Length: 95
Image 1 (cartoon, rainbow, N blue to C red):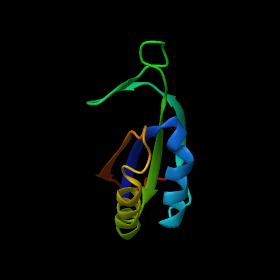
Image 2: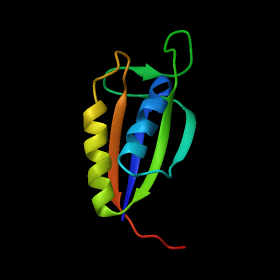
Image 3: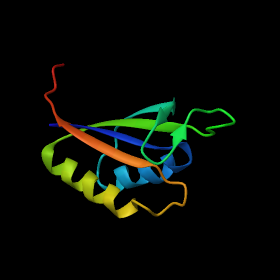
C-alpha cells in the first residue's frame, strides 16, 4: 500500500481530484488552507505572499499508485499558477 501526499494550489484542487478519479483513486482526504514555502514561491495568505495551497492524502495499492503517478504527470504544468508536488510512502493499513 502507498500513502500519497499531494500539494497543489487551491485553485487547482478540482483538476487534481479529477485526475485522481480518472486514475481510479476515488477516496482521499483534503486538507484545505495549507500554508507553505517552496523552491519557486510561497503561499502564506498574506499581501506579500498571497494564496493558499491544499494537501490531499491518498491511500492506494501499488498498482493504483502508479496510475495516480501517471495521472499527475499528465496534468503537471497545465496551469499557469500551478504548484504541484507529490510524495509517496510505502505504508500498511492498521485498522
